[in-house]
Length: 298
Image 1: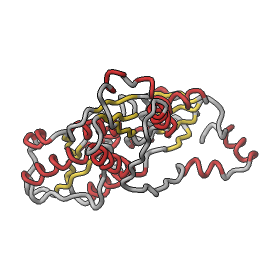
Image 2: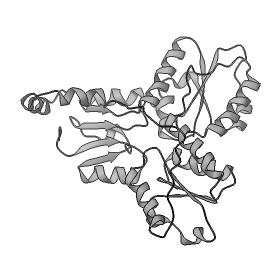
Image 3: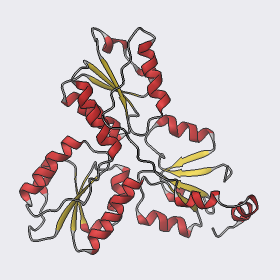
Image 4: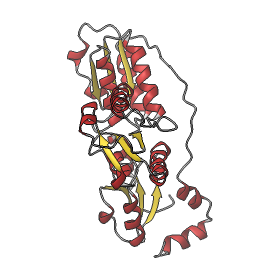
């Protein structure tokens, strides 16, 4: 280990209880604010992103920060800063209260209006003469977002779109796979935690296709009542779910005599590098690392 326990994690590293539990066993402690992290500690900022003020607070407390923000979330943060400088007012589409949205709003609260559903568009009182652009939370439902964007463009015909899609490719790919599975399945189970936005969107996608669907954390949460008279059962998972949990659900049905068939709409090849701060630490010799650990001002 590069650092001894405890290492503090600001917010759950990802919204999956099994991942969080495994980290806890290794000495990670999850907190919800920088104020809870002791001075001179090592902290990981979660994949959902953090507002700039959290980094400033950490700096004042001499906290070693490993920024584990998902690059796709970081992209939205960078877009906020870019369009703010260019004089845009930003309409951010996201779930109110979600930690990812809080981080984005913290970049420029004075120049962002947040909406959650298409009905919220009616409440916007922006001038049609303003330079407007919309950005989105990365874990949204593609279909629901399309409706909101359509309502925005109807009210503000000149509103601009982000240069590239903000919704996470893994989220989009899974939603498309669910639509394909829904053509054959009469039940779809999504493996994921209850607080996972993208997992819940998969359940919604399946139900929108007219298929009965449930969110389960693991194979023990499968309700036998759901399986009555079901012939074809589809299985998918949220983006941050460990593969072994999905395979355990698959094995549950195979052991009961089911035949397994994999449906893959798009092969995902994208690979993200480790956080820059962590890569720098790994390059240090044991002697250099020991000296770094002992510093109070790092």
